[in-house]
Image (cartoon, rainbow, N blue to C red; front, side, top):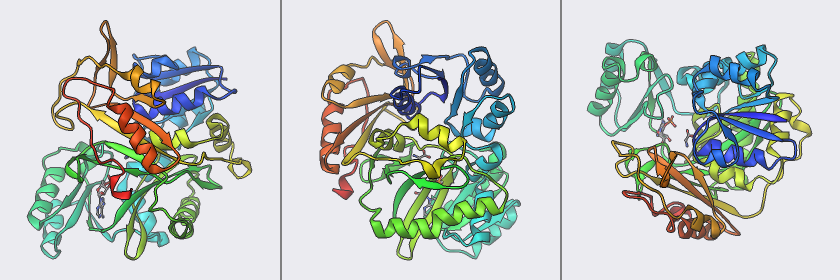
Length: 421
Ligand code: AMP
Ligand code: GLY
């Protein structure tokens, strides 16, 4: 098969590497891709992930047999619907199903209606109503923009004044454009966070190995939120008891709720959980693989990802035997100095081969090929993943390999996984 993957980050590098291992895949394309993905796929940098017309045209021109749509924006823009309407098989939810991520109000209403455990929350379309409501509440409290906002549409406010400022920024400042036209104000939940990525074909939902992300930029969960500074799997917090409860109280009810609403979700459902004193509750759904969780989870997959994607699209997931490797995986993200704020690109990267010689896998997120070799070209630059018999071994190996990599201003957290070791 000739397969096209949409996207160009570390997550897409992990998806491409896994697909490249499949005996079913003869040829791999990626749009736009990146310098690392170019080692396993033919990249088409001029077709951006949000260019739906360009993606459809590329798929036709190249006569691809299958498209994997990985990022949130093209899914919300109906990329899978368009491809399928053209007769091109595609992996990922329809635009309607992708609302699970693209509209926090949509998913919150779904959870409310079907009694799926989550934070209590109120929806506001009017700024003054939201501000008056805040006068009746106490902090900490959470303010969320409705739509996609690159992970920056959530403020966990420590004071009511901070919450009011967030409401004003989102609803008046226009910082989030249409995404902030409606906001949610919700109860603050307390507990540890776990990510459960699930393959879902609309009939069956199959959780992958549970993982943990590290969203803050600095050690000890300090500093601003980022796209994710590291991840590991499996999560020791996701015990068999928690897993059973999550399946019974959240995963199966979510599948049933979507079906009751006439939504056939085919793709990866990302379930972000908070393990509260009352049990697991949903923080958010996403309609795709997580980044960087995927760079820790997919290396543990022992089955053929292409076969799974085909089964999801054809609603044959119940017949699949999805196997996982023993042991653990950890991914350390190397970021540009200054990220998630301002940072400079074009820094020469050394040591990638040395890191891989230690048995690690280096996923490219924001790199470019220049005359001097790979140079930085993004906030998150690389993800270094290692496997180990235990979480401790995986983390130690990933750090040892990441120490071989250098570029000016490189920043990494030094405590990935350490809270759970
Ligand atoms: P989201 O974009 O919905 O994943 O939110 C980003 C982060 O904000 C989450 O990973 C949580 O750490 C935090 N968060 C979101 N909602 C809540 C909530 N209701 N209570 C506490 N923390 C939250
Ligand atoms: N790692 C968080 C996300 O992919 O949304």
